[in-house]
Image (cartoon, rainbow, N blue to C red; front, side, top):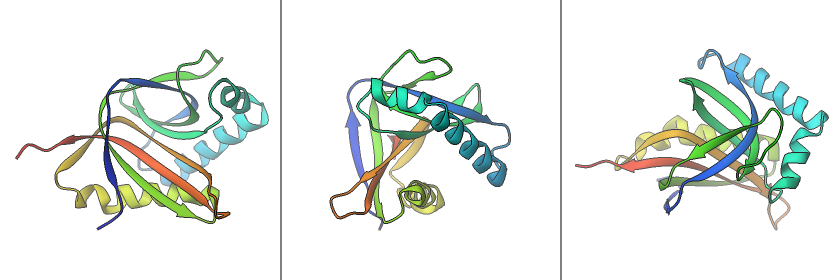
Length: 159
């Protein structure tokens, strides 16, 4: 069984992010390219750094459903007024928390995401993913590698 925990968040919270709408959820290559282009844009123009300075400095990759379309972005915990950014609502409730470690910061988020959606959600029969979004962060670990966590809102299956 994979390593995960269920944590309860008692209050709704917000995240502020810059992102891109993914027109075709199944266009993996196109979505990866669009996401990478958005990350490069907000890194180069300084908007991501400005947002990180308003918050605690921890960057998150966020997947969310906006107007019934998949959306992916990069942002921070909290509600902030930043031109071009959106403020997303995350609801109180139970969250599936999936940790991971690795040597490559840029690959770790994708590895954890692949593990979650590539089988872990199906293994955990007592909970189902209810969204509307999820977030993942990666930070430097004490051992010189990286540590990350993906958080997804889930609901206990009544049975």
